[in-house]
Structure formats: C-alpha cells, structure tokens
Image (tube, rainbow, N blue to C red; front, side, top):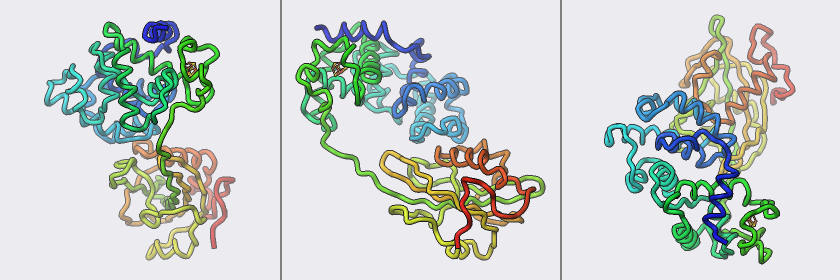
Length: 376
Ligand code: SF4
C-alpha cells in the first residue's frame, strides 16, 4: 500500500469544506492554525469567521486593541494564543513591511508559532515540504506503523517526524499535511476509531496485530490539581444603572488580562471544603456592609491541569462604594473579555436569577433555584 497516495486521495474525497481550505493566504491560514491549536474545528469555525471579519489582514490585526481581540476570543480559552498573535502581527508589520515571511525559520521565529504551526503554514501557504506532527499525526503514525515508543518523548516524536519527512509528497506537501491531520481528527480518533471503513486498514500494523486500543503509548500522566475559588459578586445601583465590580487579572496565568470577580482570599488553593462562613466574609468587607443575597456553587470547571470548584457569593450595595476594583454597568459588561467560567456564570445569572439583578423588586434575598440561602 502506498500510504501517501492513499491518504491524499482519501482527503481529496472526504475533506470538510472549511474557509481556510479555500485560500493560500498565509495570514488566514495562520489565524486558522492558531485557533485550531487547542480547539476542535466545529468550535473554532465561528471564531475564525468573526476574527477575520474584524481583522481581514495583518495590518488590521496589528492595529487592534488587545481587549477587543480578547473579547472576540472569549470562550476559546488559552488566551495567550490571541496575545501572541497580536504581538506577531506587529512584528510582521515592523520587520517584514506587512508581508508574511515565506520561509520556515522566519515563520517559526514569530511569537506563538512552534514547529507544528510553522510546518502547517509553510506547507499550505508556501508549498514547502515541512511535515506537521501534532497529536492526531502521532496517533495515526503510531498505530499505522505499530510504534511502541512513547509518543510524548523526544525519541518517539523524532521517529514519527522522520517517517513523516520520508512520506510527505514534495509536490503536494499542504495536501499531505492536511490529509494526515484530518484523518487523525475524524477517523483514526482516540476511542473507537473507524477501522471498519478505513482505507489504510490493509497496511495498518496496529489493526493487524490487535493493538489499536494500546497505541499510541505515553510515558507521563498529567498531574491535575484540585483548586477552590471564592468569587465575590458585588452589585450596586447608581441612579437607574445597576452594575457590578470586576477585576482585571494581572498575574502571568492563562487568564491574564481577562476580567473576573474579586476573590477571597486572593488565591484559594486546595480541594473544595464548602462555602466560606458569612462571618469571615463580613470581616473582609469591613467597613462596608453590603447585603448578602446568597451563594451559588460549587460550580465545577475543568482546565487543562486544574479541576476548579467555584463558589459565587452575592452581595449588594445600596450605595456604590469606593473599592479598588473596576465598576462596570450591566450594559457595558459585554465589552469586557472574561473567562468562559465567568461568561457562563453571568449568562446563568441573567437567565435564572433576574430578580437578583433587578433591584426594583425588593431588597430581600434573591429567589432562584440557582442561588442558595444565605450562610450563617
Ligand atoms: S485501521 Fe484503524 S487504527 Fe489503523 S489507521 Fe485505520 S482507523 Fe487508524
């Protein structure tokens, strides 16, 4: 069996029709590859459309405000991708006069672009024979060639990269790379791969030796940390405008520059031990005395290396206080980029607890199936 011809033929017949496959514009291919680094195609597609509509070329992206771009990126996670893309677009403007560099080394030198993304852009936009090696390709090659070496080690990756380099079609490197990525993403998937209808089955060593479910091998199990966050949702009303307090994250973490709520304490570690006693929170607010409207939680949220348990405590100030946080009216909230956890929470709050947000009603505790009674 000729692996290269078979998989390219399969790709040409089965590829999904996606906007970045109808172009060889390196800018559009770059944006799509950055979005797809940690994101499934179905989820990434509307983001690609919105971002390239707002910033159709390198110049417009380079002139963007970071907050605007983060807002468009909201919900995709791994926000450093957006920040790096912005930084790289400005380098392309300054160093390359707005023209995307056309060689592998210069592409890879741009911020946020590693081996994989550089190879994808070089092969698809510039027809260079640079093989891509991502998780999908590692899985497909490891199974097809029956590779026992763990794919998360340098020798394991090198073995697969060498194979890909030997197999890539020099006349159609972009098609070859997209074929192996698409095959791994849609057919040779981690669980229940489509071996029954697979065009590579007759040559697949894992299939022939009954090792499909055993490959690829990995040496390291990721360490997942349990963490609890206590968010203070502090609302106020000023004239006719209700609002709340948010805080821009300044630490060097994945949510850097996004907005969330003030936390008690600033960073609460360890596994969930339940909601905090009201007495503690009252002390934290002194000398202010907001009304306590209840607590929501624990809301479970998974990040790559953390399982979060999150409690939201609802407080209302009848007079807007001076606090070291940013006051935002409800109507302006949509302009602030927030992590997906906070976005979901706010949507739930607006849907399930409109009373909590509508202070015309009364000053009593919110009546909602989402908000628990106050703590004592
Ligand atoms: S036969 Fe199964 S394991 Fe082998 S390449 Fe095809 S889908 Fe993957």
